[in-house]
Image 1 (spheres, one colour):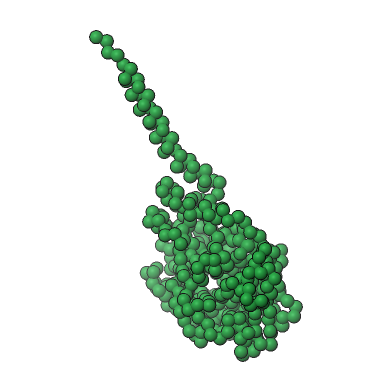
Image 2 (cartoon, rainbow, N blue to C red):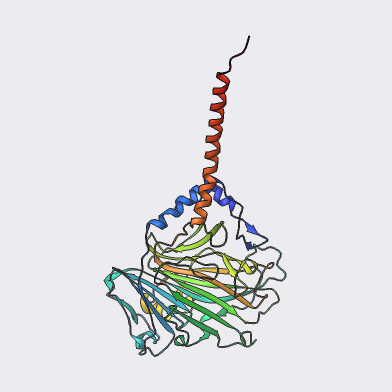
Length: 415
């Protein structure tokens, strides 16, 4: 990946304490030119469409598994979302438009689910990995003065998402928008924190390149699907509670995915420089996850409700320390290499979950090359004017000097 110019790094700042900066002053010509060159390849790739289907088969005894199948000309992408155990998603890319998902439910729901879930034919698989959402964290930040402190306050006992009760996925399945929602609450809730609240994971697939209407308006393609995590109505255990999410990844090799920060021009709101966090599972093209380091404390997300999202470095962990996911073990077997990272939303100052007891955060998962923000005609025209005006001024100045010198040389003194 191309290194980020130093001028770009210096232009990225935070507004307030931890609030992301949405709009910045006009960057210099060198910065604009470098960003234009970095964004240009996305316009050369063209737009690929896929035939996308969502399936919750009637013969599946447990309606907590969603299969997204995206068929292209020479490939098929499989996203298998499940709330069996902790919420998890399996990503599989094949080099044939005819690959299928095969499930042995008796084996998958047993104590030894190895081999209970397969994508066939096996020799068509080009890439496979997974994400598992294991725990919901809560911290008391009322006495925290250092916003960079880790953890960001006194931790409460985390909620294990493997111990949540999840709704029937068929109740929220919407073929028109290619979306479905897993909604859950703890099965054991002695404090009744979730008496009127829930944690929702809304999954949406796409058949072509577009951008959602709601912030952070992550760019997606036919090779991606989006996850929106929303915590709504749950009673916090402190007046200044911050929440976080533990995410585990699994892959074929011993190394953790590489975590990267990427900067680009995104003019969905105003011409500005934005940061994108992403995970890459291997050399491109492979699999990736992308998100902006921002969450929202209101349903209608905007600048006033934007909270900083802090991601920790990835670190390897042992499989027995994580709750078991049947679909992960069913596909990969019991010997897996797991890496974990944590996401923390908000800070002790600024917008927070306590505003309206609401928190949402989005990420895009995909296979292939991650989508790259392109420049709109508005920004391109601004750049042409900004970069062309100095040249016109220099040309005008040169002509003025040339004509002035000519007039001076034609002057004849009268003696």
